[in-house]
Image (tube, rainbow, N blue to C red; front, top):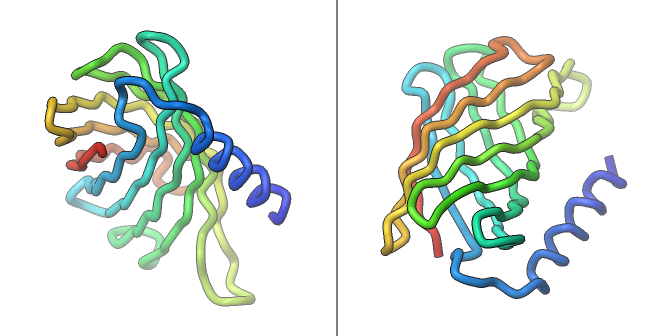
Amino acid sequence: MRAFIFIFLCLFFVNVLVGQNSLRPNTIIVESNFIATLSFSYDRHVPVKEKIGVSFGGDYLMGVGFGHGSHWLAPEAGLLFFGPKHFLETGVMYAFEMGSEGESKENSPGLRFAYRFQSNKGSILRATANIFFDIDPIFVPAFGVGYNF
């Protein structure tokens, strides 16, 4: 666990040191599927080429309709394609369930696929499909609003 946190922090600080081009580097998004989950996300973006960027970030997820009100932290890394207004996002994540000591926890790797519309002023609308491999339900769609700055 310590190694994972160390690698995540190193990647984040390398991201901060790399110069940014036209894509605004920071994104915050609140997502929900209006049934069972609520998610707060932060991502840091680095342009790689004209139509491709890399993102690193994390999510705080709350499950209310399933999983007895579980809470997860999910660091993730991904790619952004196209732009400047319409983006396709793909990524990998690992969800760590938070809970009391001694409770059994469900941790799971996962994938994210998303469509993002981003206005010139930074407002974001995002439709997301999260796929988890070891958590029930396995497929969690969500819709979100956010801001890019």
